[in-house]
Image (cartoon, rainbow, N blue to C red):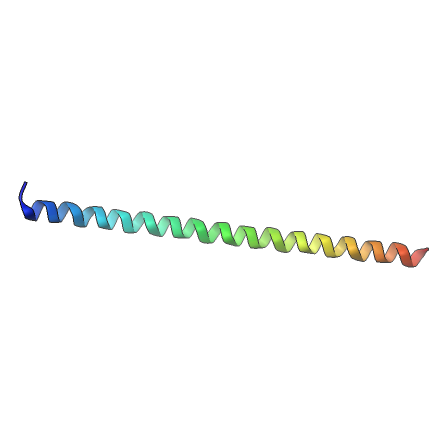
Length: 60
């Protein structure tokens, strides 16, 4: 195997790794967005529960 062939193989591997890295970064971003949405939804449910409890106390 010549140096040129080794260089070509290494360059191809680097490109493949770049593609994989981009895929991982996209997955991470998607998971972060899902987590933020879940936290926001949970906070909304918690706020609703507090509002409902306040309404029930006011009725007493």
